[in-house]
Image 1 (spheres, rainbow, N blue to C red):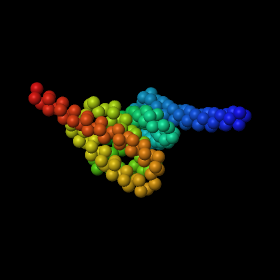
Image 2: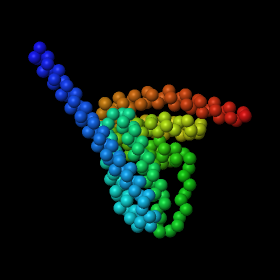
Image 3: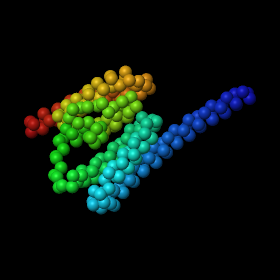
Length: 225
């Protein structure tokens, strides 16, 4: 009886310890994300001239806070990590809006229009992460799970707005990411991350197939009207 009580007590202590650790990791991630959000929001209170004159320092601070927020989210569970990455992505998008207004060459240069395909890539992977060359060399064994997480969450949030051409572009990006995964697997991708990625791919494949068929059917129906 005493032995059983001792065992149950030990198990309880272990569970409390695990829960406490998870809570601390989430608290740290929330803190870092909040710091990033507050910093980006604070740029609204700074005049355009001040932002122009101090843009190098702003860029350094943003990159540091963005990295801190992303790193702090790495050890969270899949759902929480996806939610955290979405917040980081929103702050990054807002930061890039400020960046686009900065005249780094001290000349008034009209910004080049962003193509719809690039907007789609930015939406699914983060601003500036993927260009027309579909280069995923920035993806490695340490961040590839986060990349798949971010992609899948962004896809679910935006799929209702995709045209058939958008789905064709998504397919190309997804295949390019999968090709990069084949390389990353040889570079030390952990079995745990590989299993989580497989789970995401398992959920994505049938969803994408049905959504793509639906988009094609809608466009065909609209063309007949």
